[in-house]
Length: 313
Image (cartoon, rainbow, N blue to C red; front, side):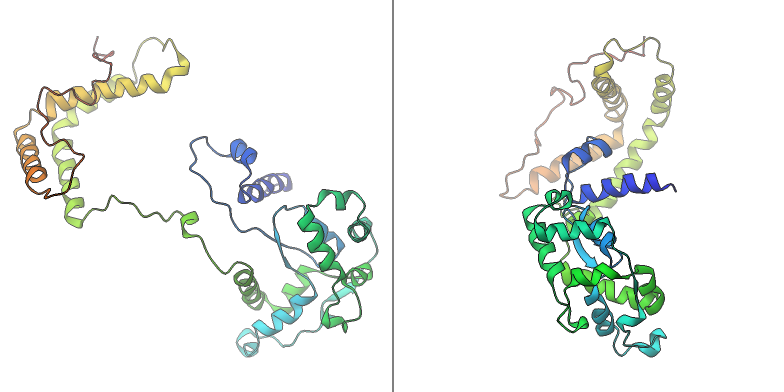
């Protein structure tokens, strides 16, 4: 997979997580249901470049790696050393390496001086967060060295942390970190919906039973109609109205099948009669929106401004 592909769709996914309308319009079908915003975090090397990269993900919470990560990994995995096959605690010296000053470090200094392109690209809240973040004096450094000063000559690579503590211990920490930052979950975002249309197992079996009844008697007719669909001559005059035309023709076809085949079947007539009695007698005092007094003179739901089947000619 090319880096360009990963970058483009990774950025798009991050923007969708923030509910970006333009990205949604560019990457998702028009009929996509409303998208719930998600939790977005960044996890990079503990160096000037990694921190700046994380800043480019707008709305993302910083997970690490930073100097506090070392104490957090030790804390989360305490007592699991034998199970994980690692030696704890890990020390700063096990992970850090020297680093040269680069333009990213200069950009971070610009945040503290309230100047520069990087500073201007940040929101007011981000400026406050990263100012406090860079001016913090981590306990692991003795409490007298600012984080920004540490970054000038030192770095910790994410891969070095992973290689030192092994994948399971690292995952234990990452899971703990995610739950600390985002303790709650929105199950609706995962597709869980609770609908008022609740059916009993018997109702579901009855729906399947009705399907079996109509499938048998309409099979031949629908097979013929499907065959005819792929041999329609000519073109639609209005291509913009294609979907509407298809809908109208579908209603006409299904109206013919319903009126001429399904409603003429004696077994279906008995089922309809029994259902009407159930709706009339079993409704109690509750008001129903279902018209249980419908008769054969009522307009069929399929006969909607269309009275012919254009490929029967």
